[in-house]
Image: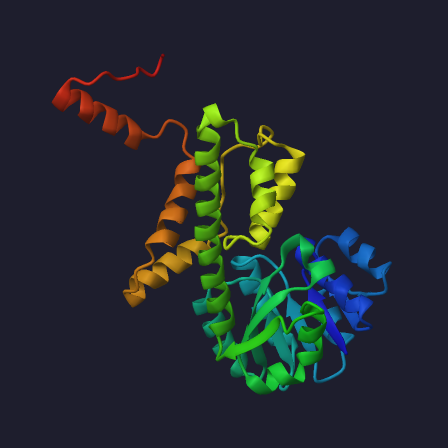
Length: 303
């Protein structure tokens, strides 16, 4: 099956390579010409523009957009809706806000173009292991493009899944990432508690390795933790600064909108905010109040 791939960053490039390895023909475009050339060397057809991608595909066409959520997704989708014909399929495999995906699906439908929102998980391991996909939109369009989803999914599982109407694919991925925030925070707090008990001199790497075998808390995240601790047992090369991609915020927004409590996910998101602050004002306020009402000792900024 021949398709277009727009956006050849780390994940988009790896997805393209997986498709090529399975015998799909792929027309690729990215503003970075070196990324296009690299995949052309592996068998992809190079395109110099979105219009060139569309021109190289036979109808009904499928174009997969794999760019960061936000303005670049909006522009790419709008441009492609103008270039594609009725009966074509446009897939957003980036993890966009599901409300934006619903709106984009409505916009594409005006031109009788099928828009599928595909939540995509797998990261840097996706090329070798496959990607967990959750797809929303027209069931008919999903079935028509199932060879693509099947190739991208893990070999030993049905990792691609049609979940429902437009927006549901990205909504499901959003909740997936919210859960991920909570799991990561729990592991982080647990290992910090292990390290804090200094008189036991616990080997964090060995404990993590032990927990990957038969423990109820074993997971791929724990496997990755073992790898990182093996490379840097004290994690001394890393800063405690932790960014967020936005999906944790959207998950918390959804919990408020739906009045469904999500205290663990919310706390995990707040901890990421705290990790980026250097000597935050909130801590100073706490110190000032304790000093004010009880005369408790405080530590001056110069100390």
